[in-house]
Amino acid sequence: MAALMIVAFTTLPSAPASARSTEPGDTAVAAADRVLRVYNNNIENLVVNNPDGTCTRISGPDHLTSMLVDDNGATGTAGVVAPDILIVQQVRGTGQAEAYADQLSAKFGYPAGTYGAIVAWSDPEPWGSTHNCSSQSLGDLKKKQTNGIIWNTRTLSLASGDISKYWSAGWLKPGTAYNNGAGCTLYKPPNSDPDTTDYYKWKRTSAIAARFTIKATGTTVFAATMHLPQENRQNACAGDGYTGIANTGIHIGADATSLMSASTIRVVGIDANRTGIAPTTLSGFGMTGYGSKATNGSSKIDYLFIEGSVRPSSIDHTVSGTKSNHLALHGFINY
Image (cartoon, rainbow, N blue to C red):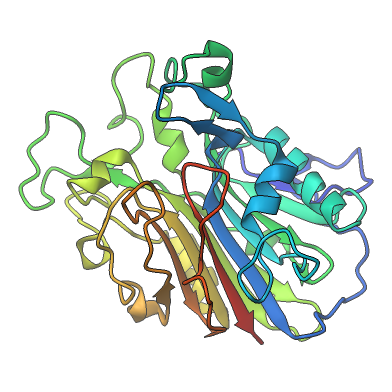
């Protein structure tokens, strides 16, 4: 079973980590402009791969400054407002999620614990070797990978029963015939990487979702984070013999679907490792994709789907200066 971690940074040291859903300050704080600010980014363990084979470690504060934007799409200005939800892929586990969330709190002058986090795996096993870093010490920082959601406890609440179980991505195991999806399986044992080095690589693609409640209004907000395997670029797979919604490799777990069905605002952030996914892909769930620019080199492989009243973005919802190998996506939602 997944080692699901809820991190709300409370002062209850005796409580098991998986039960720490109490928040620092239950007083509802309404955004002055009634806007839910949401971001999605694969933060690459805060280690950037450079074209020359070197890698660069990025601090949490520097990454946040490069990603968070004001209403005009500019970073680093006095108009940047504290976000409500950060959907992230490729964090090392609870430790990195905690540190990153606390750095976000500090950035806006809030006490540690103001931002909480959930991750699919608390401490995933390492996989891989150099991760394309000439410095092994930096490559080592990319060996543990999971996905998470960070939320602002000033504006949102989260009940322990409103967190989904993890669900696995699909993939085409190397050497398997695709046959229009007939060769697809779920990406987890026994259909994961057979070699010792990459045995736990599948955990980087475990997805998780949660249903939050806006404290000021009671509005429910569904958020999900997904990271699909590289094999999805050429062969869309979402499970046994299944190519996913609209043949994209995307699927949403049963547990998460129940939470989504009971939510008014819906947000899904994905590193899909696949180009050409249409904005209408999740229209069956009421969501539209936002942002059409490339997010990884010359390719668009990262997607943000939202059901809600999304404000226009002068930067096409894509933050060009993000300090990651993936550009962040943002959506500001009126409620």
